Length: 212
Image 1 (cartoon, rainbow, N blue to C red):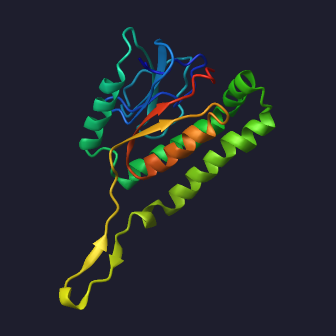
Image 2 (cartoon, helix red, strand yellow):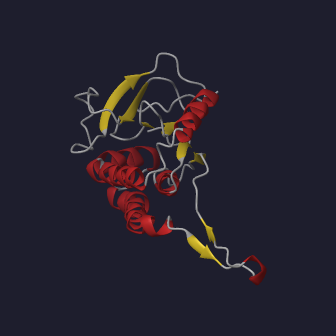
Image 3 (cartoon, rainbow, N blue to C red):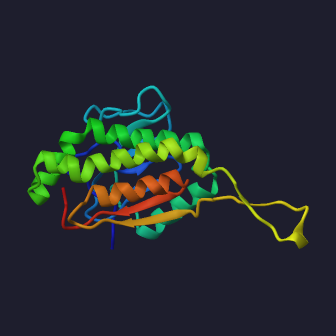
């Protein structure tokens, strides 16, 4: 069975987004140390894991899972979070995307080191192929998110007038993201940008061939 993704080099933001009310979980690998994004200002921050979101309500904490959750349990927890409506506000989505960008910027060296260990990729290629595209995509999503969520007017046949119709985009719920081995950051976090921007929760399964 799959367990929470064990981080060999814990990085801010790589783990469960939000406790209580999880919106993102990593599964796959062994049980052990995970990181959590928490929307609780009073959360205790580990000295090994400095907060990446100071100045707002988001604080990084560290947890240890003695008994890893099963995948169905994680999915059900995320579904409960989605049903609570927590992920729907545009302001919340924008804050999450900004935090993701800070993660990629502040921990660029850690990502590059992990990619070098797993794939032999140098720091320049890591930035060009994995990190910069995600940051660019997230910034683009933040810029256009409000417009994307506006109702889109739809035309009606004459028989339906003077009625009005429009298309309102709604999040679907819990998104599953399965990462490949060759671009383990870009092809996991780029889909995550879309999932967060749309107001969804996400479960991420990193490739077992990129353990770092």
